[in-house]
Image (cartoon, rainbow, N blue to C red; front, side):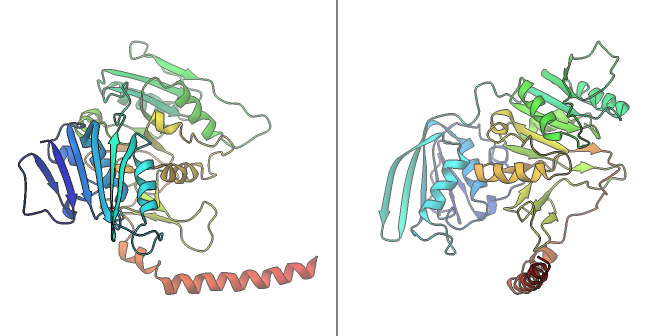
Length: 389
């Protein structure tokens, strides 16, 4: 296999050395290199025809093809040409933005040709998708604790040690006591102490762990999690190609706990219900990586490390996710793996939010009525406050 072509439909004229992908292959739950047993970064050319100008999963398509393409190979994009942005199809500038951010600036544009209403872009891959030191056998685990759940910290440490990962480390920020010295060395990170402050400096704690982490694969957890015994075996099957990754978070009663959702507004949005707990087979442009469990590449994390100004319960994970989204990250989920969580604050759910309800609440008419109501309400509030001044 030397080439791959991704189009809405598979062409009837096929060549033996080419992998043909269609609209049916666009699925955020599936990884192309696993599905078709293709060695990552082995193809000399990939091409996508008239999908990037209109499909919501544009980033998924780009990233899946980037993984297949070897260094020095060509990535060809054929698309409808328009200079107008978001006019039911993407403009050439929107496609170029998405490509450059999704591939993290690892390509050069070799050729751009406009022919009537179509455009063809040819990029050359200058750098490999993963950094040289990145390896699925190497993991840095970070644990955030406040010193009040020592037994849960011990259980989490034991569940990590039981994975038999060839190269790993455990970094803990917060007070803990672990007596089994025969296991993998544990690195204690100095816990930040803020004078006259009752808020938990969650961003500072996570940033300190990330700064000390040795490996590219980082998993930073609150002290309410456990890994099942086969967690590492499952993630090896999933593969090492991801930006941000999550998996089902399973509570004591077998339900889901805040594991796959979307936050559709800005952090302080007031005009609509912004958080949606989604079914796993649904994906949203407003994806949100909840702060309790973070699996991410270290080099990406430091493109926008957590904001040290923000503390626990101040939506630091929303801000982090939205900036990462703009930087070109894709939020993946491995539904064949899982973690266990024991939360006394977040309730379990048996399923995601109904996508029908999600769509109904976002109908233009309903949104218009809600916005108009709040605008009128705000207008009278402003008049009232002016009288008081």
